[in-house]
Amino acid sequence: MARTADPPLLSLHAVSKRYGAVQALTDVQLEVNAGEVVALMGDNGAGKSTLVKLIAGVEPADGGVVEWQGREVRLTRPHEAQALGIATVYQDLALCDALDAVANIFLGRELRRGLGLDELEMERRTHELMDILSVHIPDLRVPVSTLSAGQRQSLAICRALLGEPDLVLLDEPTAALGIRQTGQFLDLIEQLRDRGLGVLLVSHNLSDVKAVADWVAVLRHGRNNGFYDVNMTSQEQIVSSVIGTTENAVTMRAAEAAEWEEAGL
Image (cartoon, rainbow, N blue to C red; front, top):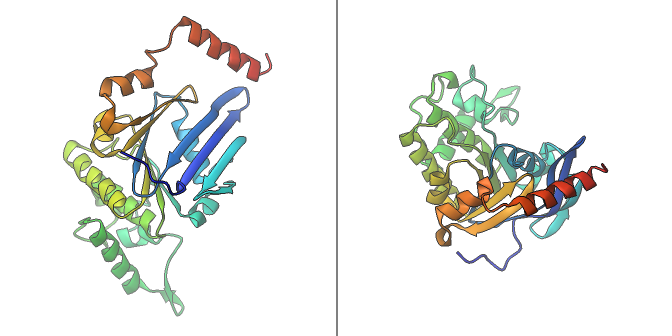
């Protein structure tokens, strides 16, 4: 799949992050364009969650450049990322189980009418969002604790779309879903792409990635370890990049020496 000539929605250049003596990310490069799904893969501890936090504004990068639509930005707080048009759906979904679907979607962004809440308008907009994504929840006024895992995941996506974002970050969205629910959720991701949004999909599931992603970016030990066109790359090559089977004793010793040097040891 050819990439457009327009500036990417999001572009990271040599982004790094350290926690004490641990170098979580080193010189990471990444691009996400409008209307495409980029999957972020890597083994446990590869730096995927750290990278998502940097993009979402939860934590600032220590070094490197973050560009949004070709303009350099600094993300230090979640509301800064949201103001740009970046929405994040975390693995735990961050839903309030005791509240209904409408209250969860508008939590912190409630619409008011006079001295009270405009419940009718919020419910209308909730139906509108769900219709856009073909999401079906029979009763919007029951506590979300009664909903299925797939319905809860879809609800979290609808909440992310309330702010009309340009880029959606999805952190392991199918981890708790069954086969049928996963298929429905992958359809949702394709709808986001078809609507012109950029999607960064964090996943361990190569089948999901091959089903919906256009590109795969692989992290290993906090560094880039490959960027692949899904349609032109075999599963074996992606798996090799994720688990590092292309490494040998020489490359591993060189990487270790670089890490020691960075730590000043």
